[in-house]
Length: 87
Image (cartoon, rainbow, N blue to C red; front, side, top):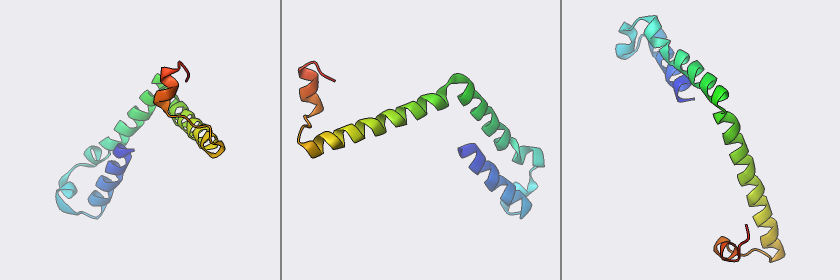
């Protein structure tokens, strides 16, 4: 995402001829877009994207379970659960 934002900023600066970016060639200004595409390709290929989605879903599920247990008065601290051998 950072490469994409950097690319958009560079294109805007080049187009409106602002600052030192106006002196750069267009291929230099467009490099962040190529880096963003390479990052997304690697993230999909390596499973990084899927891993992050699963981590977010697991965190949301655990928060929901903890909230429900707390509302029922059944929530114990995680340290107590670990000592007893629970999850």
